[in-house]
Image 1 (cartoon, rainbow, N blue to C red):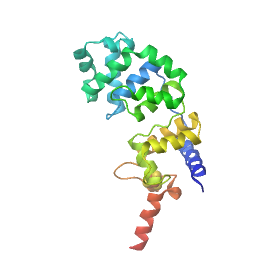
Image 2: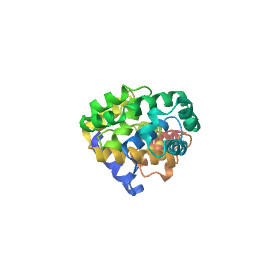
Image 3: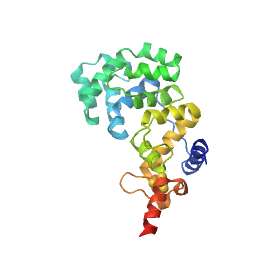
Image 4: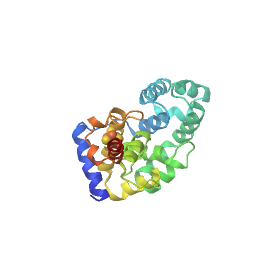
Length: 221
Ligand code: SF4
């Protein structure tokens, strides 16, 4: 099977496994704040800090950029790396109305460039904001997603995350990439876990390089 057909088949099986699509339901500024907060922490911690920020801004997240630094840090402390995250939020949200307008207009590649010009916003964070808040065609790769893709062996070993994202963005549309990205995360959280992947439960085992290797090693013994 060629790479594109393989990805389509994996997509199909994951959509059967996770039939309910993920709908973040946040407005663009909420999604941007949440995405910055969620780096290197759990979604639960990021949600907690987002709620704290809503409280201190009376529900108007655009005021995050005006908050005194100490107040901002106090609100986002539970999600860690608060010095970097507070700096990123202050810079991004104080310019948000203009940034949001440009992000709407720009093609995905240019929008990634604009977002990554802010401190502490890398290409993965930029892609998450763009796919979930702006419906752009981007394919973000977090640790779960990367682990599952590596194990499946769809892409050459030496391809980095940006190269994989760019391949996905040039071969599939935004809806496909959004669903595939999130379903890979779901598989990574529930079955293809970091320490002990539960391959016997996995609907992708006949397509998976890691599983094939494990089976061959067992047979050789
Ligand atoms: S077969 Fe195992 S390693 Fe491969 S994707 Fe499924 S759980 Fe992960």
